[in-house]
Image 1 (cartoon, rainbow, N blue to C red):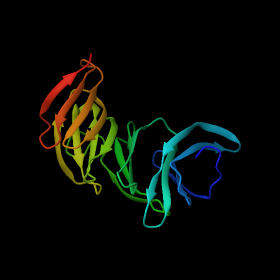
Image 2: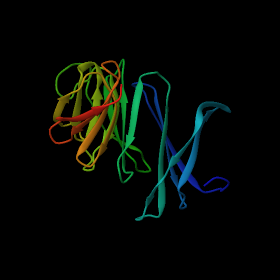
Image 3: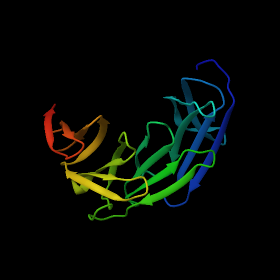
Image 4: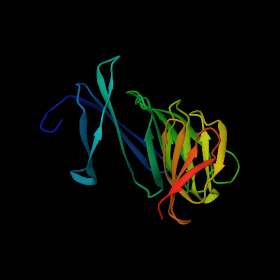
Length: 201
């Protein structure tokens, strides 16, 4: 919390294909919030971000993930409900989703996709999120769809949404924001992708 000094173990990994620099902090005490900033050679390269930490009852630590990207290709990031996995989406030139396991070694589980329109391929993937059962929903913007994938990259299903960018899951429903076509929020069934209602303009 603000004003407290705690022990933190930080792991940084640089992924050459895309310039991703990942900073994974494990707070060795119990805190509810942690402010994270990125500095290289005493020059701040990202603003301070205060994030909610996730307490791990097994080993008594708090897990907080932060990242900075050297290129402008990154688009979204999400951490699953128990704080054990993180996904990062990339637009041009990669058109990929990277899956990481949030352990002290910061293991990269897999890289999903390439540029294209087939299942598990992307054209400018934007925001993404986890469902309650740890599958991934990705806003595949230029393919006008939302894809559902496993954390190992297996394609499950998709549904059509025009120009999707932001996305969130609550129970059995998905909220998807459309940017160009109407700028609306669509509420859809997670199981079928069927439109339940929409609002906004």
